[in-house]
Amino acid sequence: MKKIFMGVKLRSLRAERGLSQTALAQALEISPSYLNQIEQNQRPLTVQVLLKLHRVLGVDIQQFSEDEEARLLAALREALADAPTPVPLPELQQVVTQMPALGQAIVALQQQRQQAQERIETLALRLGDGRSQAALAPAMPYEVVRDFFFAHRNYVDSVDRAAEALAAQAPRLASGALAPWLVQRLHTSHGVSVQSGDAAGGSKRRFDPGTRTLMLADGLTPAQQAFELATQLALLEQEETFLRCLDEPFLAQAGEPARKLARVGLANYYAGALLLPYGAFLAAAESLRYDIELLQQRFGVGFETVCHRLSTLQRTDAPGVPFFLVRVDRAGNISKRQSATHFHFSRTGGTCPLWNVYEAFSQPERVLRQIASMPDGRRYLWIARTVSGGQRGYGAPGKNFSIGLGCDIRHAQRLVYAQGLDLQDPEAATPIGMGCKVCERENCPQRAFPYVGRSLAVDENRSQFTPYGSAS
Image (cartoon, rainbow, N blue to C red; front, side, top):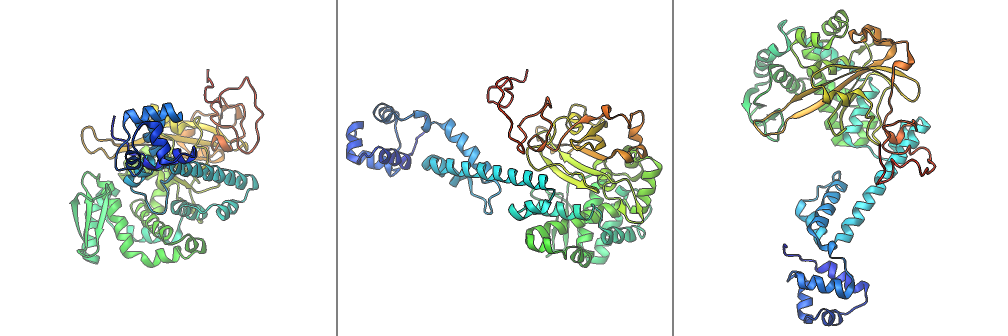
């Protein structure tokens, strides 16, 4: 057993029972000075004293166990994960060991806050007014940036055309083969030298403005190198274009972190548009019926990059299929959401396990198709496939995601992935939802939570929502 310093907790227990130090010391058969040292954390609690506390005060010894501390520490770290100022782990450990009641109160308050946010989002969805949520629950910077691109239907005309204009000056090569040309432009136009090595912090790119050095991480594919080079070029050449794009009131209200993140997002957008210029890419996509793997081969980029670009083809005079894109991990976290149309998944209650983006993990690197219907009756064609990368050697974890690309069913016939599917049969669609807590399908066999928009009557024969309910 490790040394346990629980002076604050012991003082609290004594105060709750109205005992003086002398009275408790007498009950525990120790000296008042010894008890005082324990309460001041100058001496640890011993097993003998713990057993006497249990016998005299009826204290549950489990309160002092390492497992209980670890459980509270994990809950506290999660509760403070989005705190404005990160709390160091040693300080959290101090709270857990010395002031567990405070730690439990923080966890409880965070849970209440999360529940309130969920109710706010549900209310906003029911009212059909996204501004309701924005007014009541301040969004995180990445949410603001996502909403910025959503408001532009995931297409930023000035940035896209600027990238296409530069692409016209580049050699007619596959995207991955553009890296040497981009290196030369960075050096000639901006005095930037490019090196390979450790970009620090796990990042793929790090620019030092003082030395005018751009460091690219080792192990990047030629296409990834070209993308990172194009992103840095955008940050150096397109500042005025980006500032005009970012001159929107809601971005200003969101604060500087959101504006900085949006700037990086625009630079990434520019890089994708430079490697896959709008006119050439749209023409190829239409001729190949949006076959992603054939587009990969033609442009020399990865599956996810092609999907990203497909979700941006909404130029007014030459639109492509309006796609929506998501990237998820095995735990159900959505790390990317992009939409050229109305479709979006809720931030509340996870996503739907019947969605094929999760089935893709069981069939790695195979393209899966799904006709899916939402509770409002809308139907969509979804394709999903896993992507992986980031392996750093034996035993090191890599990155594994599932990419989902979808479109409204009325556009499905333009895609090669619709071959052999009955697009007219409503029964062929898998019923999915935005997440259990905001999905109205009460009879769904995969429902994990009751619908928070309606109070469900308690049925003693339905036990799936109780801690000991059986799914079988």
